[in-house]
Image (cartoon, rainbow, N blue to C red; front, side, top):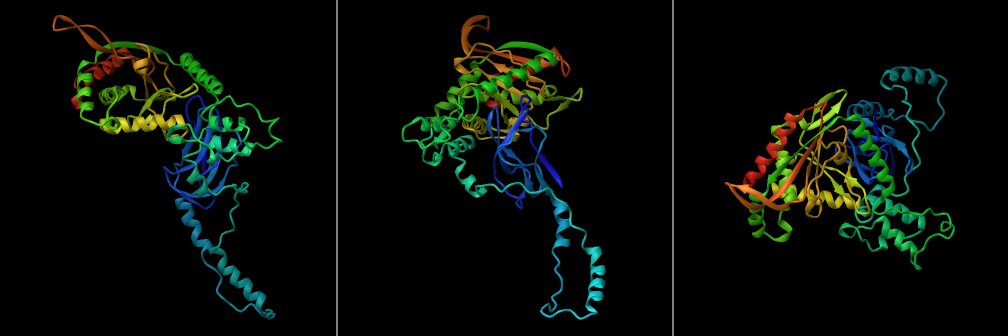
Length: 427
């Protein structure tokens, strides 16, 4: 029997609660299966299983549980196979209609003694929790259009969430849509709940104030415990911009690339050359990342920040990276992130885009050891072949953990990013 526990969906998470189970006792699961929706201060997260076996029992819904608390018991594959033969055999058929003769008890005792080695005593298992009200199949079919938090709130207010018009990504119904419907005269909240229902300032399935507190706590801990060092360089983006303009001119708008795609791929390629900054600081030692999983910082509507991972970014083509980036942003803002995307980023990348500041100095997200920042691309005077010409420039910064590396290694990473952006056709 193995325990599936509440995952730590980031260094700033302390508790979470299961708001939806997508499996039931007896269901078979394998690594990568989404089995639950957990609500945290960052919204509703799809939690993936890392075990191979059969669900034995589940934790109740709606209960705040700390990180590491047991959410489910899983009979792993080998254990399930060992139990199956003992349960499969059935007693040989025999007449049972008439009472047994006097000698029958002795025969039965002898038969029981023979069978005893093949039938171990029943294993005690934890009591099963209360059954889930809605079958998992129904939940899975409707959850894509209605966020779990919105559906739960709608149930509290007596509103049919499926009948609402969603304002989220792809028409998804959000918590804000439910609250708006509750405020309309035709909404159907239960009268008894109206006076006692607490106000909900949150939008999109999370409380911005609570998220700000969690981010502040995590970043404050990072600044206190991690000896940061900072580096910055200015990169000529002219070659990358010219290549990008030519590439996009030949494609439909839906297939075009954003500058952020090139920045991400250049960072991924640089980390292949300088792997000392791709990983974690754990148990007073650097632990290299299993792959280059770039955590992309995404600003959420209504406030807050999340940095889910784009897995194996170095192995993706630019169109694949653009598709992954677009998908990640949409799901982050509509409440559809997966637990693996929040637990395994090996480094964070933040870009302020075309409406941001010219540079950003990031704070390391533990247990990572570095964060790369890109400012807004601006046109400035630049010296090229002894002549001053206008060029698009981007200020690139690095904040790194001095326990894991020093300025020399950090400088190598920034130089590698610069080289990659000067040869955009190789990205």
